[in-house]
Image 1 (cartoon, helix red, strand yellow):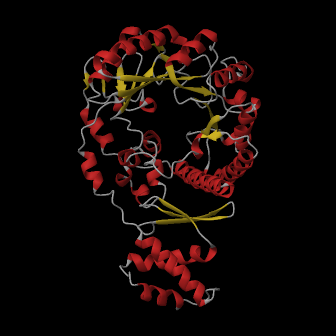
Image 2 (cartoon, rainbow, N blue to C red):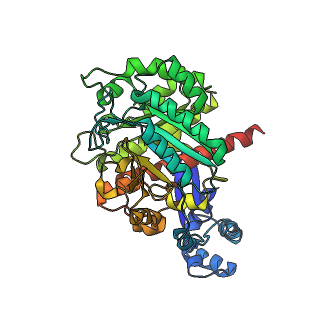
Image 3 (spheres, helix red, strand yellow):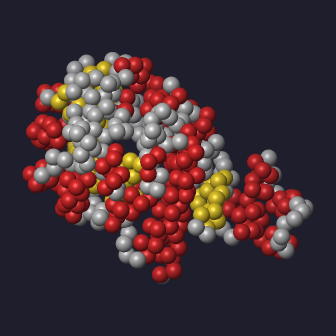
Length: 466
């Protein structure tokens, strides 16, 4: 499978199955779609392919250049870097049979919040249920469950989530201490993370977080007017002026690493690149701003008609990031970060985040769900921290969720980068986890194209400096 596109002056060719990326001249770019159907029919003879291409009318190139371009394409094919076969579809059958272990928990330490964000899928922390704070006893059972169900895996992850987890800060600290006490006797290492809106951040919390939290996610949507419109207090007051200086202090105290300022853009700020750049201008180096996922009736929902504008914004943001990097003002944008040489393992590329199998969410009263976005939907209640997983059928359903189980993914060039997208989004829009959220897919494909282009530009600049 081949995907070709032009971006920022580059002719980029992706060989999806091999993962190879090529930057080519105009003639090779035009030869590839002419040669691909011949190769797919089993024609491998170079003379036959050259003759077939040369017989095509209206090619504005001399015969010698066409022959040279065809030979270049066939050389890449012979090296397995173009028109490569799909070697993963058969692998997925064994993958479905694998023994799964739990390696990560999202601890809903607080089903309560001190903000009233308009787009909150968690209903200001209630998650279709009741406000509650997780007790230390429930949290201990959750960590015990994780250790007991992690098999031989050493490295385990726990995210303190909400609502707003700082509303239950003492329990967070106590659970970190308990987790550390489990490490030696059980040959485990906990990686704790924290997601917060920052309202309650103070020096004591920051000192502890910098010691114990491997990563901190700081919620802010960008410009003051945008953030305060979508992330107000219940009384309507904005949160921007309170959180910005606190977040700047967090970023600097962590040497601009191991954190993200994380925002959401909506129909009300289709010029979201301005919000990304605003955060960069505030001094943040690790930035994530992503599209809201909302039902069509919500006034802030992304519409299909918004897609052309949003794709232009991604292009504009990518071009500006190149300019700033060359000026020595580089920052990272989470959705443009891509590894073309290594990247995730095969299992991760096929199945994504591992929700419902390797990754589970725990409510304040100890119920287990496939992930934080399914919490409150009783259809997906998998068990609890006392009894463990009692609905193995739910786990098995998620175990079989992969790019080959989704018709929309099978022929998509982005499938090994997005790993089939979000199961919760699929369910919320289509009623099953093996579909795909179409608007999200369109934007994901665009982000991947921009990410690859940025990597190409960076490598080209590095080569010129040598």
